[in-house]
Amino acid sequence: MVDCLAIRHVAFEDAGLLAGLLASRGVTLRYAEAGIDPLDAVALLAPDLLVVLGGPIGVYEDDVYPFLRGELAALRARLDAGRPVLGVCLGAQLIAKALGATVGPGPRKEIGWSRVTLTEAGRGSVLKPLADVPVLHWHGDNADLPAGAVGLASTEACPHQAFAVGKHVLALQFHIEADPARIESWLIGHTVELGKAGIDPRDIRQQAAEHGAATAAAGRAVLSAWLDQVGIGQ
Image (cartoon, rainbow, N blue to C red; front, side, top):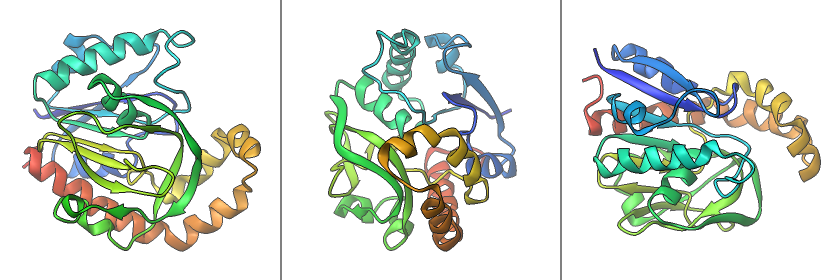
């Protein structure tokens, strides 16, 4: 049985659209709750696929959230072993940090739907369906490009919106896994962050209505192509 372990840092930022794709391929999905479940090298090396999901904390806040140290060490073991890893938002930043890159606050928060600019490598990668499609951003931190990684996408405020390491690691700063039909849970869960950023939830809700269907279709295409690339559920 092919299995996927997803590390979840906050309940509503789950595998989203990826869950359905995995189910259609006969892949068993289970969650590890960060800060509660053990996240050691044994746990992270075992599954056929590891997905590291998003969350509202920074990878550099390990004094406040000590579990991050163990998660990073175990993630590094998984990366060193060359096993498939998908990272989303905080997950992408954790991958970058585990590979020795610097992660810190960006110049401003990016929250809402907007396009990314694909690099030449990005246009030839599994990300090519995103060339003209807005994606959901929800972050304030940026990561430098790790040594040995290939940059795939950027925005003005975030030069490294996506990167790959070989064919087995894909790190996405943005959210193509998020189900636009469930955006209300994000608006509720991130109400404090939205308020501090001066963003009206009604604007995000309207963007979801305008762009959600196209983003979901492109996101499924990207995720399906990457699962094919790493041989998960074929």
